[in-house]
Image 1 (cartoon, rainbow, N blue to C red):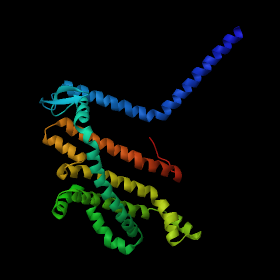
Image 2 (image 1 turned 90 degrees about the vertical axis):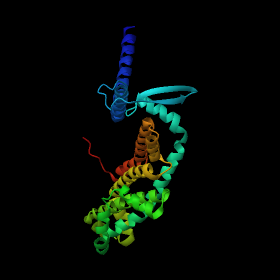
Image 3 (image 1 turned 180 degrees about the vertical axis):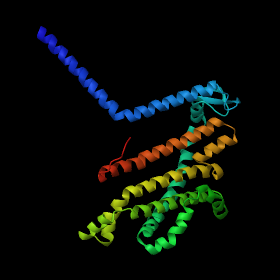
Image 4 (image 1 turned 135 degrees about the vertical axis):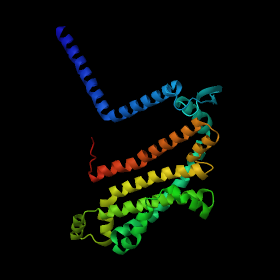
Amino acid sequence: MKLRRESSKKDENNKKHILKVKLERFLTKYQKYLYQISFLLFFLVAWEIFAWVNPFQWPPARYGTTTINLFGYTFQLTYSFLFPPPSVVFATFIDKIAGDILIHLSGSLNRLLTAYSISIAIALPIGMLIAHSKKAENSIDLIVKILYPMPGVAWLPLAILWFGLGNTPIIFVIFTVSFFTITVNTASAMKSVDPVLLSAAENFGAKGIRKFIKVLIPAAFPQLLTGLRIAWAYSWRTLAACEMLIATCGLGFIIEYGRMVHDMPIVMSGMILIGVIGFLIDKGIFGLIESRTIKRWGMTIART
């Protein structure tokens, strides 16, 4: 009897130990995400409380109302006009934006993907040419470096005069932003390849196009990917700015429409939507490619 009690007690202790180990592994594996979710919830709660209480009367007390239709019920909400709480923003998004979200999203992605694809097709070869031809570098590099820092929106008046209103000027502006970014980063990536690596490849018989495909591209690929990722981020921001100014649909247009009808929850809904979709694209596409590149190349990321 005593032995059975000791055995059952030992089994119970083993189960507790296994559960403890599993919990520690879970927390270690997902600690980063738990921190992020916790801080996000804290931020939303703080925003909600501050928006309703507004103890410092900032922004200046000016109240607006909005009518929300949810699940067959009609609600009239009163909120600080310049600083609505997240609950009002979410309710407004569900009622006034969610039904047309696919129209706006498809319009934005169509413009962005068109411009981004064209810029990749043109900028990658030019960047490689600048990196491996002294004549090309001396003739092209200067004008690229001059135009590279120019904000994308600065091209918009010129694009409107050239192409009129519509999708074409927006596509042109996004193209200029991503083109110069990819060109500069591609040239830098190709120049940064270790010459010793190229010499070793030549000693093993890799020359010409074979050396380019088998050695040069793989060696420069991590930095090339970084350039493509930066170009995507710049293009995404420029897209939103252009759509606010001249588009009649798109994610940026949602913000401008909210401003025109003096509906701050619509403005904030558009801002959050642009941020969330941009984050998902960056992590879902570029983040995935980057993680696979790190594993394949045997690279490590320094963490603090």
